[in-house]
Length: 106
Image 1: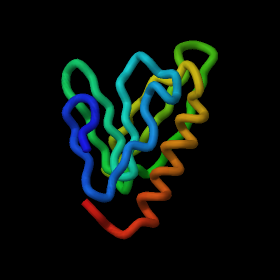
Image 2 (image 1 turned 135 degrees about the vertical axis):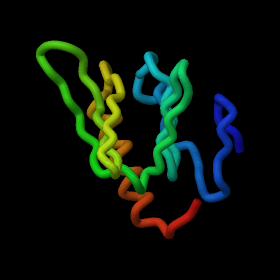
Image 3 (image 1 turned 180 degrees about the vertical axis):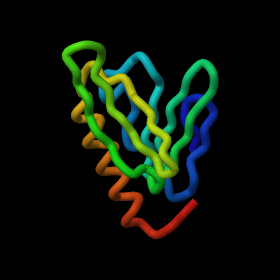
Image 4 (image 1 turned 180 degrees about the horizontal axis):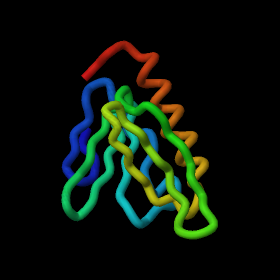
C-alpha cells in the first residue's frame, strides 16, 4: 500500500493516524504501526517508533503548543499541535508502546 507523498508501507504496517485526524494542518504527519513520518518542504523525517524514547505535550503561556518527540541518540522534534495536542501525544505514545511489544520487523 502507498501513502500520500509516495511512501510505501511494509507488509506488517498500516496507517494509524494522520495530521488530519488531529486537526493539524500546518505539517503533514503520518503515524503508522512502525514509523512516524513528518513531511516538510525541505524533505521528510522518518522515525522508527522503536527509536522514540519519549513523547510529551508542551503548552506554554507564550508561543505555541507542541508535541515533543525525543529519539534515541538525543534528537528532539517538535510537532505543532494547536488543537488536539494531548490526543496526538497519546496516540503517538500508544503506537510507540505497540511497536515495542511487537516482534522486531522492518
